[in-house]
Length: 135
Ligand SMILES: [Zn+2]
Image (cartoon, rainbow, N blue to C red):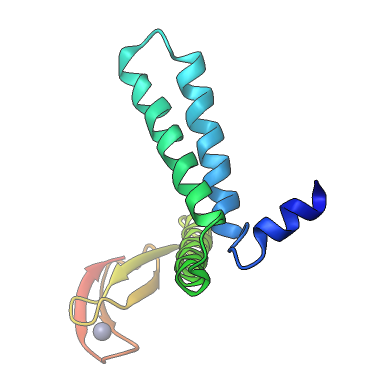
């Protein structure tokens, strides 16, 4: 049986990080649809979960390994960017009492200035543009 499965899976893509993520998402969708089954709107989650499950199976058994690999890389880089953003937000939140954050109107660079200094002229460290804000 095990050997049969192994033979079946050779040349096929298998499980990756994206598959694990989708699996967890499918589980959440199905749990929502089970416990919220009395609300017709929530049946959307049932179909979403089923659809994603089918898609996940398709990916696992796919023979187009390079395409699936590419999808996984895209997912990983998205997850990484999300984590970086979350870290940045956390940091900003921790400093909210002592600093203010402004975006440079020219290059969108985030600039941190100390709070409570009244109106100040801020020079962007990236493009040297000056702008006035209340700190
Ligand atoms: Zn700038």
